Amino acid sequence: MSILKEIQKRKTFAIISHPDAGKTTLTEKLLLYSGAIHIAGAVKSNKIKKTAASDFMEIEKQRGISVTTSVLSFEYAGYKINLLDTPGHKDFAEDTYRTLTAVDSVILVIDCVKGVEEQTEKLMGVCRMRKTPVIIFINKLDREGRNPVELLDEIEQKLDIRVRPLSWPLGIGSSFKGVYNLYKNSFAFFKPSKQTIEDDVQVFQGLNDPLLQESFGADAQKLRNDVELINGVYEEFTVEKYSSGDVAPVFFGSALNNFGVQELLNTFVEIAPSPRQRETTKGMVEPHNEHFSGFVFKIHANLDPKHRDRIAFLRVCSGKFERNTFYHHVRLDRDIKFPNPASFMAQNKSLLEEAYPGDVIGLYDSGTFAIGDTLTEGEGFMYKGIPRFSPEVFKELRNNDPFKTKQLEKGIAQLTDEGLAQLFTHNINPNRKVIGVVGELQFDVLKYRLLNEFGASCDFVPITAHKACWVQYADKSDVEELFYIRANFLYRDKNNNLVFLAESEYALRMATGKNPKAKFLFSVEHNDQTVEMETV
Ligand code: G4P
Image (cartoon, rainbow, N blue to C red; front, side, top):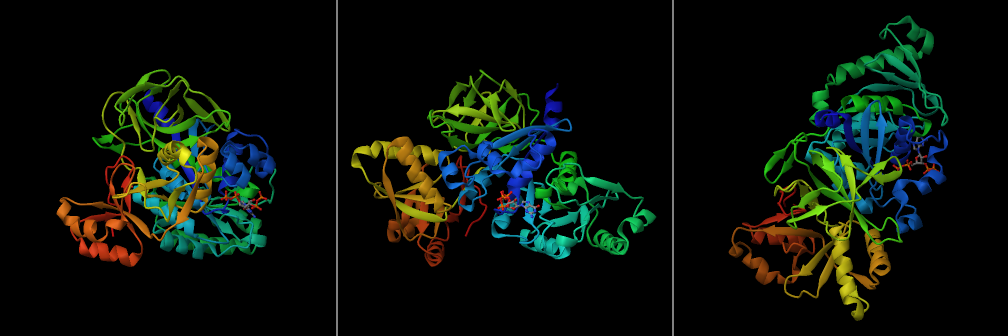
């Protein structure tokens, strides 16, 4: 098969949601429809949850939360679908942000009872930034949820995206009858069941079809009114508007009841983009470029506690990857070959011979990779757009065992390469080290892993810090004030970039006011090509 055909076959996406909206349930149902798993009905049972590919990390099992990103690939309708799972827990949000750099589109799940929640807003912010095409699935229609029109308004306002319903529900909760497909003029009748994966669908000849009256009685008029209203209010759907990230098509359903999932999946494969060109430090690279290239967006350690290796997840962006071939590690300026690359089909990991744009490869790694690393066939460019954000929580690192200093340093270096946390070393006193994370839980994971994998015991002592800002200036005199007056708050990140750890919003305002020529950035790129996403 030609490389173009391979590219067109691939749909690489992620499902995102606020925890509990139904992401896991929907993922399992998609696997069920694709035939990748066969346990109808019991798909959400604990058994599957425990053996699911995403549940492999020790600490994850202990805590029962999905803290790592896994990859599930499956075939459906002639397409190869790569689903990049993301951790639901908000403390691992940065992991999710990075995964979003490796996908070509996203399905956003919203709970119809709760509407748009905090985590949804943050995740959509990242999608908007990258203009990622989004399909919205409004879930749990079997529950007494909010009015759909209200929900759509809330989505448009809070998520700052235009929506276009492609289906419309009749009733909700106990009165939920099903959904009307606005384009196919068909109605899928809701049957609360976890067993069946076949939707009971009736096709109508438009809204004036007498069969509609026969099927719905008094509700037929309501459905007609609703559909007319929707078609009047929302602009015509086009794949172009969806692909450019301007309009999000919306579906309604109930993942738990296998309802509306197939419709979602069928539309997804029809409209979701295949791999497209991507930005690098030397300009755009097309997926059908004959030379292989890709970047690491995730590093996962200790899948098997018996082996202490890590897996670097690489997204193929151009050309064809082949096993046992030398590729160029751009940051290290070194050529490396991979005898055992892994692919991920459904829940199984297997040896991979070749991979194409859109695919995600697992590369066994003993510390050569860091997030954002690029592999090429010899060219020197790096992929752009893999962000590093200011952490939310900061604590000072205290070594509990001076005899294990080296182990602690090694552990911190590796875990920060993985993107689990960020290290800030004081600009004047390098013994003062601050660790920044998105959520408290990451400190527990760090402590656990430092002890278990590196034999290093440490504590994290709370400090007062509001944000980390990467400071950029053309001339050092632009930030003299910072170096003299605020020297105590100046740190270096892993790549020796200057970082101002602002104590409070006020301190940040003061510093920016006094150093007007400097740029204070809340995010930089992993490969240090500074991006100005959110300056103060
Ligand atoms: P998440 O990955 O987004 O965190 O959500 P998850 O799929 O785990 O779903 C969260 C809860 O919502 C689960 O219930 C799940 O069964 C339920 N759920 C998912 N889809 C639907 C739906 O369409 N209708 C209804 N009524 N519930 C739905 P749980 O009680 O937390 O877990 P479990 O005991 O069912 O495993």
